[in-house]
Image (cartoon, rainbow, N blue to C red; front, side, top):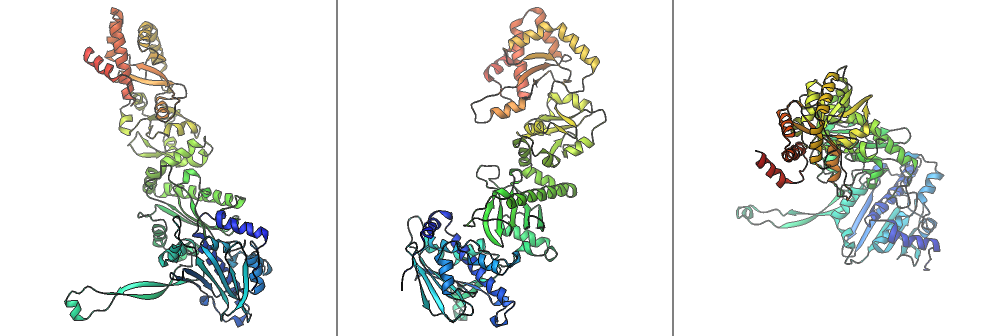
Length: 634
């Protein structure tokens, strides 16, 4: 029996197959089961027009047999089998796909579900096996043949005995090493889990004899004596795969409980999803999908460790566990899967060619998610608010981090707490409820709703009866500034220098007082030594003596957020100290200035500035000085 050599190109490719093309060794089982499914599919196709075959769809099966003593794993099928020539062509020349040729010769459409088209998956067996034996008998042939190889050195083909049509692949597993336990692939529960993970929806049954234990029957005397039962092993044939994917069933066949059960089982979530969508897209691209919106964020969701992505299947075979390209970052919370026959896969089927089909599927999925969220907002407000509490932060980051590119897609999903009744409102609800004379969408920032409620800067807006959006997350103001406007209404911080509410008569009065007290305001500003750009009299304050506002694009809240980041670059808002001219503290400042007590005036300036910082939730620069000033001035 002569050893035949692989072609030089095939040798190089086989070496790559073993060492670099596949990232996970466990993939070998998926590939061999997919090949077995292809072989059965070919014979099943022939059986539709050839009565001599005598097999119906229910007669086809893929068998797994693990022998720990012999260190072998056998994958057998009763499919179409291979002739000596086909063994030579399909297994002797790497990347020559018999499935691809069969599909073209028979002019099969995509419904044929033949999976393997690249002809290299078989060689993944050499990642776990030191020797591979293939015994095959082709349909219609009287002879069977054996193909054997130990890798790149070559292979042999010889005549052998086999009663039935089909193929057996026997893997003699590699010895365990410090890094790899190849014997794990002979464990029945490991094999069962791999079939469930990668090949659960192969449409032919994958069966294996499973060994279980049960207590032996006991006599009445033994039971009465509380004797510890002895156990015996028994063998049971199990079908390891479910075969029919849920997503390929008609929606009319399925109940709400079916979708929820699938979710909790498939994605290991104890909580039911808030919403799901069963998508059957029959246009371009063609795909099936199940999409779920979880009710709670995973513990690592807002960390670097979290991996987004949907499971990706091709004809029911798992290709990628998390295909990140199918979800934009702002929808990274979505769980689910996509099954498509339109994707161009590379030779290992582990990675995708980044082609138009994938991008088109991703665009279609994004539209579906957006539509489902808007439906939930409109039809089930309570559930949407639950979703928003868990994942709203990600939507806001989606607006800010893309510099507003996606604002048209996402802005109608936004919610903020309103000053009216402290409930969530959407931007559309806010604008719809605006009074005719209201020019701006007003917002205020702070760590909590309670803190914002007490901000002095909110007084003027509230006195005018206008609603304020309370922004409590670090990203909120950045997102709002990225939006700039919503339905032609500009966003305006309650700390902005121009609120559009100032009474012209009042403004003239304030301006006159500022001119009258210009010396005092300068003394206060000088005493603060550049901490503020200026000290002014305020029109917005009613009951509070003092507050901080800012001029320019960077607000006090943005300064706080940016400076909390681990960067060397520190930013500073252009701070303005506003003093309430109607408050008794202003009279006190005036009398000190008139008496010439500049030292005491300076201390009051520092005290008021520190007080304004604390109101804003910012750190005071010198707590000891602040404490001493309080004691001294009291």
